[in-house]
Amino acid sequence: MAKRSGGSGQPGATWALIAAAGSGERLGIDRPKAFAPLGGRPLLAESLDRLERSALVDAIVVAAPPGWEEPSILLAEELAASKVVACVTGGATRAESVGAALAEVGEEALVVLVHDAARPLVDEALLERLLGPLAEGYEGVVPALPVADTLKRVRDGAVVETVSRDALVAAQTPQAFLAPAVRRAFSGDLSGVTDCASLVERAGGRVAVVDGDPRLLKITTSDDLALVESWL
Ligand code: C5P
Image (cartoon, rainbow, N blue to C red):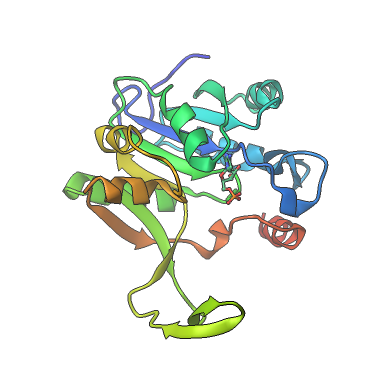
């Protein structure tokens, strides 16, 4: 599929990677989470459609669940998602899936957005918030929400300590990176990594935080799916 120019005016400047290769066992369905039904279409369709229609995104790469590459390509075609330039087979971990998608990103890329298919309700206002700090010297930007609950460190079913939540936030996706920074970060060890920003941080990159969005809930259970469906 062809690449085309997006909101930056620079062809291929901003690439969005969609990590969609998780099994989603906790949903208890007969297919990977990205193909769970949401509003009458696969979960993956929601974020794919939204990123395709974004004026800020030039090109998209999907990391599909192993064996689901073809249905992912067909879905992109059904959605007329012509920004999708590749659909790769995901890896054993999220970081490996993102790494496989990153390998498809063109040399011309300036910014890479990494998003979870499991957070379908990505919107344009959030994408705009993410891109701001990249022009101000940051190498990465994460959306985050304040932590509402009291946090406790627990061992063997007993509280070890109560952790101050003052400086703590809960990170979401999409996360935005300068292309060289994320490429550098992914050239190292990917073990034990739960988000891309932590790799950039580990490599010494500065990562900014912007306001997240409560509607960017990550779907884990069927209750999450029903809740997000009610917001569509
Ligand atoms: O499992 P969890 O919901 O935390 O995964 C977050 C995102 O990472 C999901 O969108 C999932 O599809 C993706 N993922 C992936 N490859 C894996 C595991 C998870 O792309 N091996």
